[in-house]
Length: 101
Image (cartoon, rainbow, N blue to C red; front, side, top):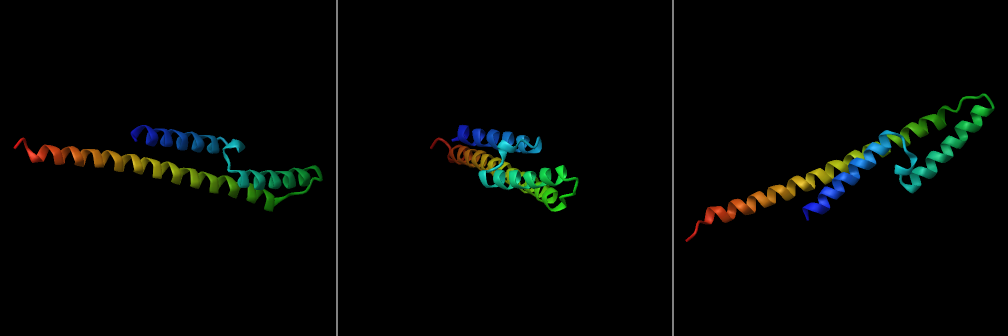
């Protein structure tokens, strides 16, 4: 069971790092669609030499929300690992406290 939680922690940490590097493949499918739609609007307006503040804010919001979700997933995986370790320690203390008789 520890291997699964360690793998979950590594996966969550990797995803968080990719999101912080702004790698669009780390986003969920829905967020990718929103991101590319906003980027298309922003690029289209840039070609016309106009600002697209709503699209730019939407892009920043997508990245901020994705980072918050990834941090929460990482924290949950780390908490699960801590709970697992605490349960093992408690079980071991229980066995030792019973004594040999």
